Length: 524
Image 1 (cartoon, rainbow, N blue to C red):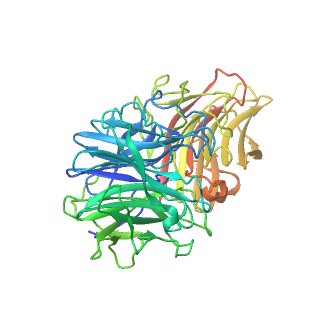
Image 2 (cartoon, helix red, strand yellow):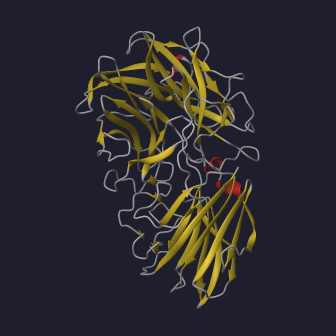
Image 3 (cartoon, one colour):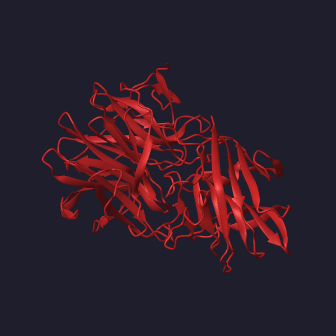
């Protein structure tokens, strides 16, 4: 039996991890931006194997973010447990990139849910807010702010204010506990407070979410006092390494102490290819940390970086049932792995109108615009994978199409669909690049209702196939570049999604597409 585990612990688009422990149970949440249900919640016993148990935003009426572009929505949650209640604080970013940023709290007695409706904290500006419950049970808020008199680009800071534990509103005045100018830091965010050995430790992310991302620390004997900056900052970063390093852009961490006295940090990172491209988005990694002799945190391994293979925590191995590679849509609700783009105010899918099929209604909305398209998708979690679906669909007009969509956002995606023209059926591959939709290739196909559509990823390319029998693979067009869907190409915060898609392309339709099953096979 190996004594190491392999990073990442959550593969695919699971950024901004936050963690807490209750007895011998560990709970973790990540950002989800515009996808619904939002803010996935995971459970573990050993910090290595994780099972998703719910979402913090799981009711359509909880939060309205139907008009947000893909990199807006639900940013950087922070998960806490205090006196029998789970608290999750989150930043809701809406409208446009420079628009509203509101911070809210939801609570639950059980992390599986149900979670409460959001309570917004008045005048709580900034992003990446978190909570801290002191030993006297006082409740504190930390968040970042943009300096009014910015001395340089990215001049941010961290502020602190007490919260009323009942109303979740500010009490008294806020205190600036880290002005970025003190360390000439750029884009300080993601604050977390911890208390240890008579000190309040403040951990933050710094340097932006790409090349210079890092984790930094400061400390004070008084919670709202003058925070001493760690002389070894950044305590974690790969900014000194090549961007072709197998793990890059690490940062935005949170720490937890095990019941056996070990300390571990969850943090985000990416796995690049072909220079500096990453389609999986920012993933969740785990690294051992230790409180060093000088009282500051450091990585507890031989090379001081986040590695693909790390030693196991001193915890009993606990493996959950694996998610089946094929979903036959036999349950009454969608599995946690599936998401829609925005909360579907008008439900466009059904698991009951045809037994053991997912039915998508053809709506006028398209995947290449900021809207709620008829799309049910899942994260790409591997550089190498194969995904196949069994589609039954008869187009009734030339505007109707159904099949698969592979997306980074509305501006960058591939659309692989069955349609028709003048009563002839066609298979089509579209590309959306920087908002421009182009038909790459189309091929006349037999007029059969059932067709099998497959997409295969081989690190740098996506290849599309089709067949009229299971395990039949006809090559469709030439391989297309995967770099089109890289997060650094669209300059966004999410990762690739692949899923089932149906549209009537801005026309009215009563038609639908039925999907018998969907298979996703990831390859290491």
